[in-house]
Image (tube, rainbow, N blue to C red):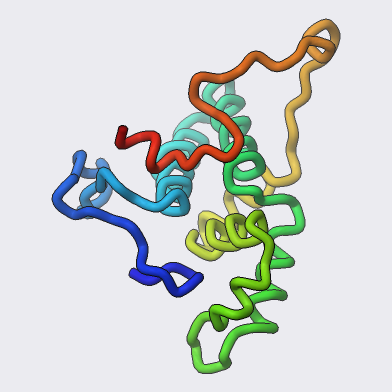
Length: 165
């Protein structure tokens, strides 16, 4: 499938890792970061939120959604509105996505956030939109400590490439 920027999406059908429990589609070993983020949100984080009534699972899933959207996907509270305005202003009017020149005019962060936001369905958008507004902060003595480096998250890392190493 073509990406929003006109480039072919990266996927290798013969590197399947298994099936989603509720899907007939195979998981692939080499998928785009956008597809990876969308799958994490839909197949795991949002399902965990829906399946759990309250407690640590809800808190952990909500926190993970917020971090994934804001830090990895570069989404913000303004992304849904800005994406819609950009799409409507640059769409060709015949149901085709915006031209590649409009895509190239965006910053890298805008492209990443619009690509993720544009790739997920309306139901998932409605579910995750509140988590663009919520932020978790450490209070007290934890607030003054520098964050510990994570073995999993580093800014600028392309996770789809890291996962298949």
